[in-house]
Length: 239
Image (cartoon, rainbow, N blue to C red):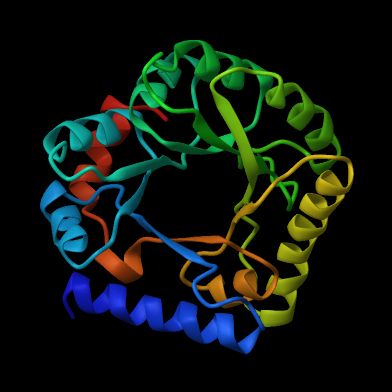
């Protein structure tokens, strides 16, 4: 299948899940995760109407943004953030899903180009308490959220999570429900969060059932990533 056909198939899954779980039609946005795929593949997705693309590596995102500057693509940064990479992220990304510390948020705020619009920010929550994953503990989210709302140039939009893999649908739902309830608790405290970035190819229906507004899909759109390119990027960009 072509990239365009894959995007159509994923779109049909999203619309079916919206209907199945009583979500408003069109309330879930597809973020095409294009890491390790060439600019030509992104152009192919763009040609069929995909506008938002997610990248995990700063160098890769900035190089693609330069090559694809004519498209007006909306870039989302979704990978772990090293503090010495925030300037490049702030210059390129309209959304940053993986903020998990005040230091990173402060640097994004200070380094955002003055002429650029506010950066949309999601706090990454380590909802499964995995030592190998980035993210702030759920108990620390309210205070970090409060501090970020005070920073100029950033707009706190919501929460992002990458739960530990679960194969049973109800178990997937249970973890995503924790993220949804955390957002609801924050909004009850006076925040105005409208975004839940959660769900990938294998669990996006469960995420949509629990309120996801952005699902992040990569391999199901672009196919398997190039192992040679992955090794090269690991050497040149340690994120």
